[in-house]
Length: 143
Image 1: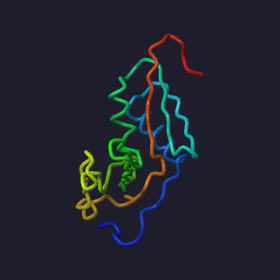
Image 2: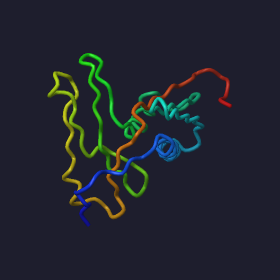
Image 3: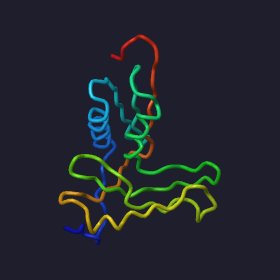
Image 4: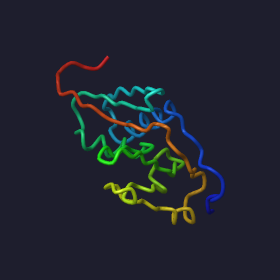
């Protein structure tokens, strides 16, 4: 069933984005403890963990929920619109990027998926602009 193409995507709060990040991490790294904090005023989600998966592995999971980015070279923000699938996973539907502004981030256009999206897929904009992770390799567990 094709998605409704008219209207605006649903906004997903920073708090709800943090919940989706927690769920995605639990699914991807079963048994690994993560601490996920969110700061609504900073539009940020921060993930901390000790040992286990690498920074790169975790980033591959959590970056899917980032609402956009900032290209410092040209002082330009860019926003993403996402698909949120029924299983809680997400990927970018559309992003203008910054190439047209003289930046480095390419346009992303996955709107073809509208025609084949599984039932229950939602168009969303994540309000968490910054999502980052920090791995601690010390022996002390997180509290």
